[in-house]
Every structure is written in structure tokens, then in C-alpha cells.
Length: 175
Image (tube, rainbow, N blue to C red; front, side):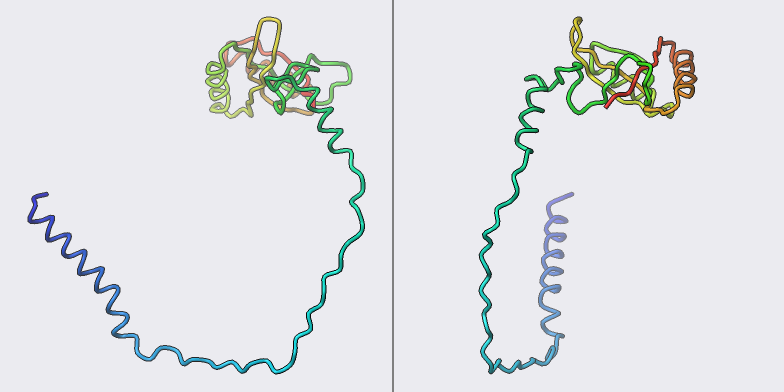
């Protein structure tokens, strides 16, 4: 844009802004009629706020928070099962397992786990990550679930193993 055109555009914008500000003042007219409110003649009674003497009942929240803090290491992993605090816990199935997940893979590199999780999600599976400390170091598990029916989870395990050329395994989805 050449300099002369820039001056014209700037001038036009200035005149437009000036018109937006001034024209409503010119065509406004008298506006709304003012409303006169009569003063209150009577005295308003101020009610004092009563002081509360009751004390909140004792709580064990602080004790619970301290107990929870003792279960989490300095890196944020639960010391009972090694899973990162707040992530789903996958364990080996037990006879009383009620909730199931299919572990589709386990990766040392988080980026690889995220890519595989995204592939599963792209194929329509409810995939998630669960990081765990092991003797071999930190592992990022990619799993699908949870499922309440073991047979449904077993069918899904076979489907994922075949479709993604992996050795998926059935896991207990613990709380």
C-alpha cells in the first residue's frame, strides 16, 4: 500500500470514528425524563448481627490428608502399587475382579505411548495411559476400558491384538 493511500485510509477511519462519537450526541434529543425519588422520612432500624459462639465440629480431614501424603512418593507415584497418583490402576486379575481393562502396550517413552493411545482412539477405542514404576524403570501403559464384563474384555483383547499386531493382555481395573 503506497503512502498516499495509507493517509486516505487513516483519515477516513478518523472521520468515521468522530462521526460515531458525535452524531449520537447531535440526534439524541432530550433523552429520558429524570425521575425524582422522594427521601425516606422514617428511620430505618439497623439490626445487629448476632455473634456465633458455636465451634465447627472436629474433622479428620487433616489426618486423612497426611495419611494420603504418606502413600505418595516425591515423584507422585502411589507407593502401594507404583502407579502415578490419579491415574487408573492396572493390576493382574484376581478371582474377585469385577472391572476389567485391556492393556494394549507398555512403553518406556511417553511419546510412543501417546502415539499408540491416539491410534487406538482414532480406531474408536476408549484408550488411556497409566504410568507405573517398575524394576525396569518408568513404564507408560496404554489400555482400553474399563469393562464390567470379562467376556467382552476378552473379545476386545483378541481384537486389539490382531488389529494392532500387539500382545494385549487382560488386566484388573482397580480403584
